[in-house]
Length: 148
Image 1 (spheres, rainbow, N blue to C red):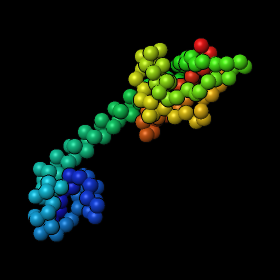
Image 2 (image 1 turned 30 degrees about the horizontal axis):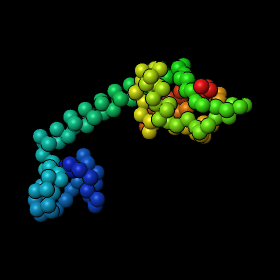
Image 3 (image 1 turned 60 degrees about the vertical axis):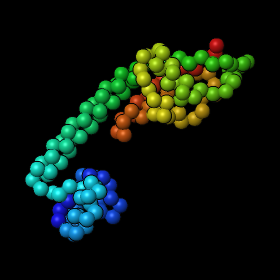
Image 4 (image 1 turned 180 degrees about the vertical axis):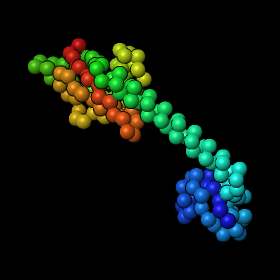
């Protein structure tokens, strides 16, 4: 019997796949536990429509991430931190501080978990910080660190 999986099953396959299983296994385990549906015409058509919708949503998210990356390319934010003599900074700039300043200065919500700081920012100057907007899109934001 052919079955469309509704969730990942360790030994069978991933969600959305069509797999061939024994009739008894399908009737006694997969169908009652709502792990899968019988692969009939209606269910196959629903699966096809669902996959098309998911692809469309993924394309829209990718386009939005690319637009945001283009917008961030020429922008910069300024972060003020307490510094001592010769530009020695007390502490370092974290992704949380960069996220808060981006919200305040640029009015952009950037998740602090998506900000990738290559090395700790522990001195005054300008730095380029990568922001992972999408699995295929990474933007660069300039961060200028100044003394208070």
